Image (cartoon, rainbow, N blue to C red; front, side, top):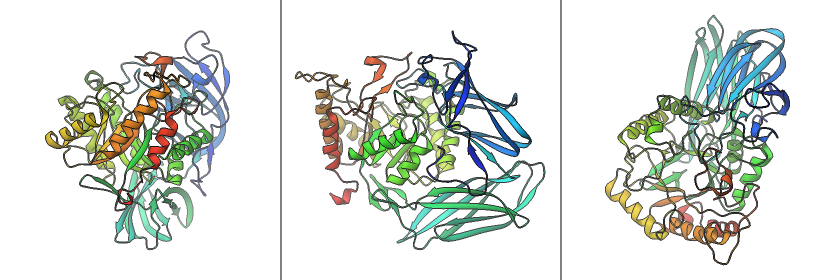
Length: 561
């Protein structure tokens, strides 16, 4: 499944995954043996490869000819792609998409091979042993498209409120993959309005961006309680014939910062959320539509209005469903817990910035995304780290100035980077890693931010808080790792955070228990991060009802209290 809606009426498109491919491991005792495996999938879900670190080659055959475009939604965590034995693409990062254009392919059957690699090395600054599992394989769809010499690469819609009505800026990127220039017409339809660009010249082998602004009278507002969505359709014609199209989906909503408030469509919002990893014991990180939808239904049942995509960009199916259900999303680039030494890896800045460059254009139109995040718990207390944060914040603003920015810090009273983002965010674990009373710990930290940092006067979020519990471990002693201790601790934590003046909300760590890297187990029983409100099989812990009762007692909008 590529998206939850049709993205083309004219351009032929076919998902190559959703079927069996050949898989051949390159290392270990099963090296050279070929398996038939479903895709998308992670090889850790195959019986012989539950802990496999290495390379694996996926192979399929398809029929096509002419200009083709191959889009890879996610390969973990590096990919080398060959077509009929010739390399056509390579990519780093499991969580962002990439593509390859192949002009003038001979009509017939063709062999597509993807060599995936989930090993850790000095070449990889972001995929390191960590408090979550880095899986291997084709974890998101692979798509084959037939394209014209000039095709629509993307369309971006930036809505803006004008009184009670909506305006929007529309940008369209056209790509010419041929060796000669083309003159084309482009047309965009959105919410009953049509915008046209005539006689646009696209140079050979280059791309151009078309831009226009328009009022959209009568357009309805996207909001958590009424997530109204609109399709935006771009068509391209040449010599009177339509040659390409692209359909995306968006919503008219606006996010602004006003003092210490985060405003959605002019109203101050209160975040009641969960951090969530893409992880499941049966599917690993390649969750199918039904499993993603079930997670979001559970989150809504718990009273949540937001999800944080810790700690990487998420599958577009997840974002599509959040759009449809009115769930606000904090989406962040790929980085978790990187030390100064990690950030000084010569590949770090390029790989982290590439993730931002790939994440934002691909997910720009999702109205559910209300904030961009970067560099969770990285070296923000160091001068070198501060330079890296500054560059990445500037890159986000260059790519999208319509959304606020933030980063989740765990540097208690030492963070140097609060001058860059619009929102200050902290991960804290009082009553779990620290024995201090929750309300005192939080109030002291918040006051320090206001009195001694450049974060003074900005919105403030708690982006991680929680306690661990082993599902089924219940004891009247209410000791740590028991379900009773987790429930009692979360009651204190949630109450303190949502009662803290100036705090815009909370993300509980975390939605479900997840597997951690075999090489990184720290103090994690079962080699799992066990702080989920449900376990890895989505079975409810005692804290489920505690969280549900508290979340449902607070409204999404502050003015409804």
